Length: 192
Image 1: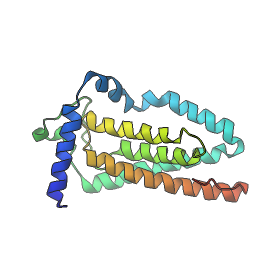
Image 2: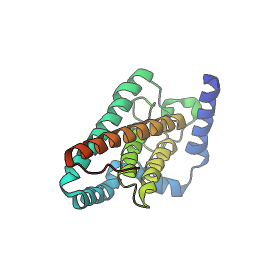
Image 3: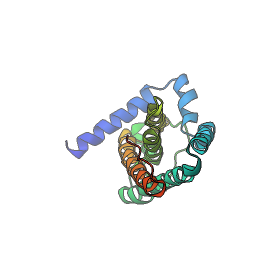
Image 4: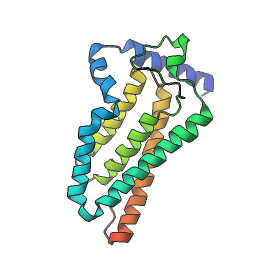
């Protein structure tokens, strides 16, 4: 597919999500969903869950999460964005964007929200693969990513590529965590 066609599809999907899907319910839900402070109760629950259930290995889980965030944010924000330099859609007048939050002057591709949340979501998806709730982590990351397009700060391709990158990083980080856990604690690795 030629790049022009792909970008045209991206523009049209952006208009669909950002403008045509506008409604009060999405405004009420999606604008706060993308803010990190909104998720403090979830983060506190996860910290408590890991601390209580992983006991002496909890530090290794926390280290895995910290490394996952550092890798995903560095690759998305510091490497890809600064080299691709794609203008955010909220700065493109031809798109007639509905701007629901302040528009950053930073670059658009890849979405760091999508990359970071899918990386963390994938790590927890694999860590808690034995539960029926594991899919909620991917849903959580997906809603936050969709919200980035809805509020007007990212194109769909930004969040799709960010999601793919985040999933790869989350799987890699979990693999490193699993191997380290196996070596230090002689535990069986978690099979996901």
